[in-house]
Amino acid sequence: HDLDAFIAGLPKAELHLHIEGSLEPEQMFAFAQRNNVPIPFASVEEVRAAYEFSNLQDFLDIYYAGADVLRTEEDFRDLALAYFERVAEDGVVHAEIFFDPQTHTHRGIPFGVVANGLLAGMDEAEQRLGISSKLILCFLRHLDEEDAFKTLTQAQPWLDRIAGVGLDSSEVGHPPSKFERVFAAAAAMGLKRVAHAGEEGPPAYVHEALDLLAVDRLDHGNRSLEDPALVARLARSSMTLTVCPLSNVKLCNVASVDVHPIDRMLELGLRATVNSDDPAYFGGYVADNYRAIARGRALSKRDLVTLARNSFLGSFLSDEEVATHL
Ligand code: ES4
Ligand code: ZN
Image 1 (cartoon, rainbow, N blue to C red):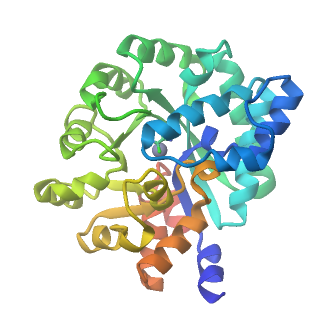
Image 2: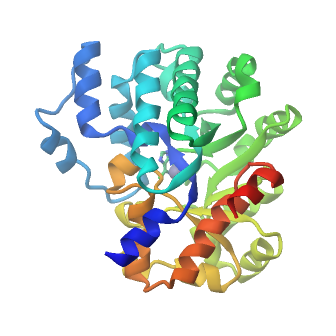
């Protein structure tokens, strides 16, 4: 198909990818076997059949359970490398990937095992595939501020290899204000800031992410559309939104890709990008997301180029590096 080839051939950056969410059912079985970890599924088909979610929490319960098979530095390296090998086919030339250290440290896996493994996979991807990448440490917002501070302290030895901090997990009931101080500490260490906001939470949470966390980028941000003054502010400040269409549909935040607001976001002057979020759970990698909205919303090639261009403009690459991709 002409459109599929156009999308795959479009150089793009992925800015919203939870590396634990790239754990494919086949890998889950392979890691479970080699680490002797029991899993409550008999087959890959059974795992896939369990991926029916009615909201974010439904998904998170399964996602955290799945991550239990990740035990060794080699597991994290293999997980990261498999992601890069897969998206090399999608035209990804740069990726800024999230990881959730608390998911692992809380079950006894040292921070360094996770970080060293992921960084090894990232380095190998750069050498073998020519894909550059950055790492973003996400705090789990359902846990408390003290735990986030502990995690930031554990990250200290790796700070030269961590581009920024993010905020993910259960949004409603855990507003950005809960993490104002830890984000200020991260900023003082020279780290960039991003936060999931307006995925399930109200526009007020997006205002908090801007005003209290001083985010450099907004993850999802969909519900900003309910607040015209907020939309104007986001457009005026060229704030990047990392939109994840297939995720929005799988988590029932958007009824189908046919009614996804991606084109409305572009028309409103928002710097929207397209990303996969948790590709192994939501039914597709980044090019699948581009294809789904291209068909669902009849996007033009010009729109697709704008979305890909926005992915570099919104990245944490230097202006010089961005220029090489435009
Ligand atoms: C996530 Cl889709 C989504 N939302 C919030 N937190 C997450 N962690 C992994 N995927
Ligand atoms: Zn996400």
